[in-house]
Length: 284
Length: 294
Image (cartoon, rainbow over all chains, first blue to last red; front, side, top):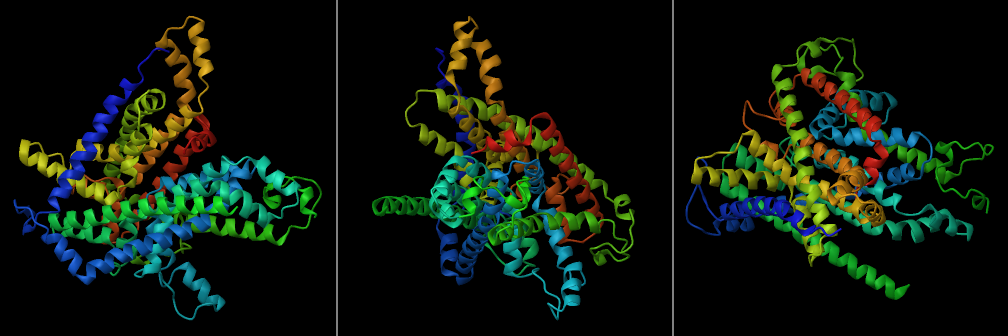
């Protein structure tokens, strides 16, 4: 067809570019202004906010906590979702549809509703604690509300639906015939997993993990509601300083630091993975 | 090697093929247990919300699961603000999904079929909003609306348009991603056939190209809807009291006072999601939707 498809790109590119550039530039500019109180920003530019952030141990620890919690949540989600995705992708019965539906419903429902569920489950006189105490597993009520475990569980609830769907489409791209070939030639199941399934799904798994990690880095719902006001990740600090304290400058500074850390972590992991794969190609 | 006989590496226990009963291996049992645990983890909070919404507790914070005595009282007490917020969320998510398709389909076509150099750069550019943490997007748009408002007197924060642009920004990459991945598998001979039989380029596009990429469009639209409908971090900054989306309304509900009528309305939303899903499955098929994602 003699159509200049290139022209189709123009309107979408312009809209996306304007939204991206305008929003990012204005907030980065805002992060350079100090707060004058009542939501006003000083008209002069200075790195004062950044100085405050990088000299206060509390903020640095908050940044580290955000990265740590997101990484743990991503890893745990990965460990839980990969087998599920694999099983659904390789299933040939009608059950596959039902299992898939469960996952999609879970990603349809907002995390706030799931947080309500977690709060009810881990209430001191809730079903979980009553059952565990009746069985003698616990001698006092156990809760995840108000500590880091709760935040990790909340983040896992947030990303797991997306994670399973992503990994499902990754596994679907691996032809079953490859696994069959390996099995026929005498490879055991673990060997098939390590030498066929894992290497072939690795690129997709890494892309998916980074996506889940980015989702965790940008979420404050779990940390805010399940942290019980004691777990201060950077997104929580951003929300507090903008909504509660109306310190837009400081909030923008937190946001800028968060943005840069996410980009750096993404780039570094992509780079590392490339190095790793190049190294493996040399060995094998 | 008894395993060699089982060529299909699926789950022998769940697949239930009747090749005579074989003793399930330890690995198969472990797999079933692990997958069941994952499903309990994934679905328990929602099940508990639905179950405890029928609990007849007399004190607000005393709702327990399993429910003690069944009642529908919390359903009668769902505040009107919830329904208003739900209406806003639905409207927003539907129009965001539509807008994301309007922006995403031409972008995907232009990228895959155009002859511009640096296609991967364009793809990276269009994927950028997915890399930006959601809170940052929220703060950035809030800041942008203040600056624009100060300059022109047109304040977009806490307006439908303002919220819409924020969600459109994060939802469009999903449509682009799914449509691009469908287009890359596209068989050009179909179009050539239509053209050589005398169809006009526009007719070829409408009758051949568009129907073929439809699964990708559906998948992208579904993701765009989900992103907008469940979002808290962006809507938090772009809404105001009296103008809130459903997730944000619930968020403040937990922070201020825990009223079990929230559980009732949340159960209604879970039910709504299930019905919507059934419709999707009926009309387009869940498998095509999920599979065309990249």
